[in-house]
Length: 266
Image (tube, rainbow, N blue to C red; front, top):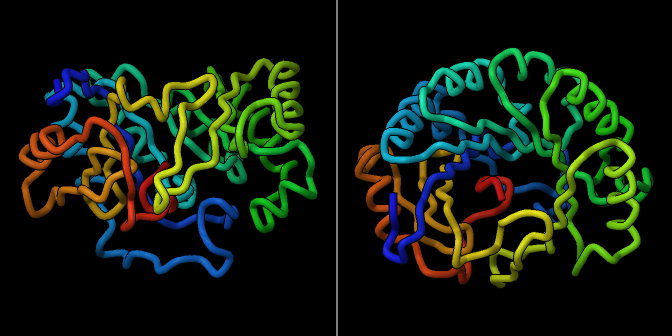
């Protein structure tokens, strides 16, 4: 699929829940946010049907996100459903890693190819503060189990204030080097202010070459992370919604005043 700026759109990010077991300071306020009701959230069958149509239109790369996708009940069943779709060349997931040691093996058996794990510091106390209660040892345990299960390559997502020369980023880079992990440094973003930059070690934030659509947990296609535009797949119909999202995809991001990271998947 080509958009109006001749970019080939082949990457779909699917938020399967707006719920999370952490409260990271840059993602949501400490008191949390108003959550979707369960009947608003797409069923696995709806996600599967939509993804099938998207693949027929040219999507070949799919990432499962949240919130935290591992808190969605039966998530391995969705992975199995999506992995059965001919045409998906890359099926991955982004997780905070807290529950990964419990799920890594079944995710691999269900057909997940690889995984991205959020980790912004190697200091356990600072990690707990940033995530408002997260346990860094749980994340490390999850990484070890994921490696053993064969969810490779494992990529670490490290949010930085500015760049990878910061002390926490340097420590994360060294940990990744020692443990044969890839690392991406993501400048801290602000949807409402339109603050974003190109990801170091990745391709996020590069508007000129953006190849992504995003499906929110309640069935809205977002042509762009930093934009208010969204198309409801239940109202428009799935195929029509994809066509409309491609038509409305902007040349560059601006502001997103209606979403939070917990319900759009970053």
